[in-house]
Amino acid sequence: MNGVHDLGGMHGLGRVSVEGDEPVFHNPWEKVVFGTMLATMGQGMYNLDEFRHGIEVMGPAHYLTSSYYEHWLETLEKNLIEKGVIDRDELDARTQEFLKDPDSPVPQREDPELADSLSQLVRAGASTRREVSAKPQFEAGDRVRTRNVHPRGHTRLPQYVRDKQGVVERVYDAFVLPDANAHGEGENPQYVYGIRFDAEEVWGDSAEPREVVYVDLWESYLEPL
Amino acid sequence: MSDSYPASEAEIAARAKALESLLVEKGLVGTDAIDRVAGAYESDIGPMLGARVVARAWSDPGFKEQLLEDASAACAQLDIGGMQGEHMVAVENSEQVHNVVVCTLCSCYPWPVLGLPPNWYKYPQYRSRAVMEPRKVLKEEFGLDVDESVDIRVWDSSAEIRYLVLPERPEGTEGMSEEELASLVTRDSMIGVGKPRTPEE
Image 1 (cartoon, rainbow over the protein chains, first blue to last red):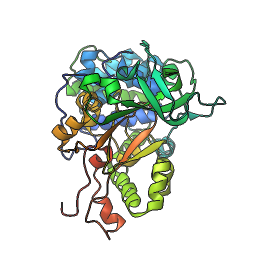
Image 2 (tube, helix red, strand yellow):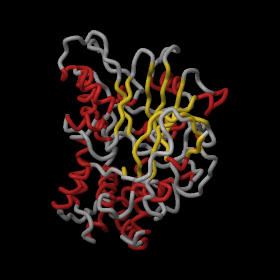
Image 3 (tube, each protein chain N blue to C red):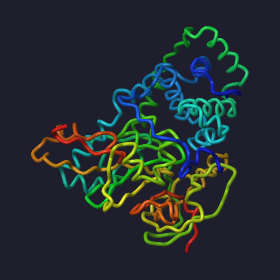
Image 4 (tube, one colour):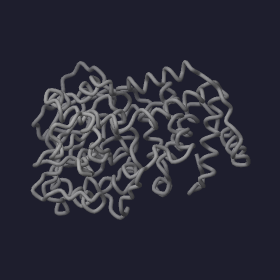
């Protein structure tokens, strides 16, 4: 979707704010949100593409005025409600209880088996690489054009590199296609290519000298030149 | 999901606790599991691991070759790897080339070698500008003046490949041990927005 999350080349957002000696989590709730994501996605309650899309569908003003882990909380709630894991009303009611009594503790429950399996998952990763029987359509050095498409759903083809010419720099393996997997349409794995774009092709006269941009794109985002 | 914004910090904290407590009560998560996996990124998984990788590459040409060929496999030799680093690629800085990494669509980042990203990497300012005016961003926001004769390569990690910058080894570090070298490698130098420290710094 042409959402506000797709930020490449947007003007007017201001200066980069670098925090010295930044902590990993700025407060306890960020740590809870991060751990809850690992614990729920790690058990397959939703997938990474559904998680990302849940952030993209936040309203643009809300997206730009909320913190990173608030984005995560939004998509966690949305996905867990949509999958029927929790109920919107019970979540709202429980939130009100904690707002009235912020120091009230979360019930403790030990689950060493889950803790071990999640630690193992962090260690082993969760690759979305898949074996496919087809051969890659493109090879390194091929010139390609990105498609001029504007899907309303999830995609990983940024707007700033649509309808642009580039060169295949690297041919990667096949990976789950986010455009399908975010919408319950299966994994539809496709080859991913590292595409090199000259800055002039992307930014025209505004390009800085001696810059190239590399973007990793799925096969269906590309057409041969 | 909130109906109004900006939400107060108190409201967000309450929502996070509410979500966790419901999942706990339903028997779907353990509080110990959440603490342990999130805590791992506070203590065990961070840029000190990437620094070990870079220091090894500076010290061992064979390892460097492997790192540039298949970064995930090379890191696995140092027992480094995992989630959000299943398919890592290392890109090498030189006198002619400076690499810098961004994720314009979200905040993809090589967790096993750098840990979780800093806020500036996740927020709109860097994500919008790094692909369009990298030289200016590096100079004005990070104090890194990349000579105009040097090519800048920006890596927008839009798929599941994760990029690690292999910075140039600082001068005056001949004879230093891997451990000493690792202490010079900063997080920012592995994203491409900084240089490693020099022995004098």
